[in-house]
Image (cartoon, rainbow, N blue to C red; front, side, top):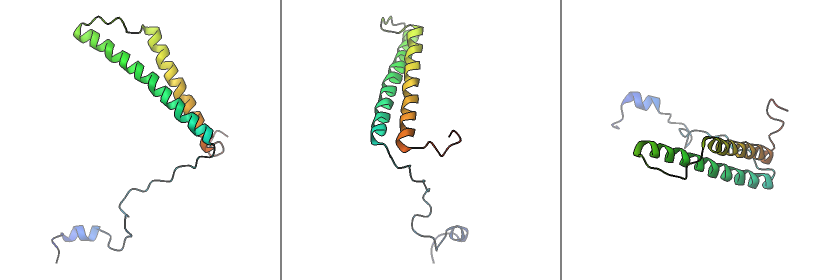
Length: 111
């Protein structure tokens, strides 16, 4: 006899195939256009670079306020907004390139 309580034994499926308790992930869509897939990855990297610069500028601005540093490298408000705008633009372009790479035009409500 095992040391497992009866209620636990009843809740475990004895006849289940191996791996039945692992979450099921639907397979990803196959890539149809390799050039668009590469373009998507490049645009996403550019997006992350611009967003990283934006985040670094925000953290340096916070450090300047908290610690009283006088850093002359902080971007002004408009330049900071344009940096975030360019980051969002590249993110949108990467998403559109990825949709083209997997050819998901006819599956949504848009087409």
